[in-house]
Length: 97
Image (cartoon, rainbow, N blue to C red; front, side):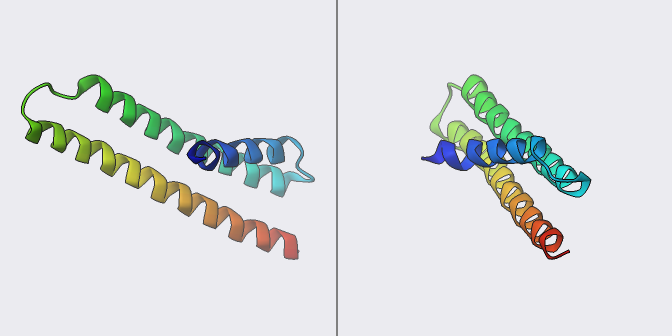
């Protein structure tokens, strides 16, 4: 279910990009898709970095590493929500025109 939250909007954005009615909608969908994809790549990179380089030492060093990866994920999710909300507001504005 969580995969749909992350991958679903990217697929929807790409479909809207290719089926855009005019340049404004195409630009909006393109910007959304690029920003969403970059946030998704950052989340994947943080998870991979955390999984590969997690220290084998004491539990305290592991928890610091998990906090680091968690902060990156939090920033990415907040960025994704911000991108979604700003895109929605722009889409509503374009729809009214």
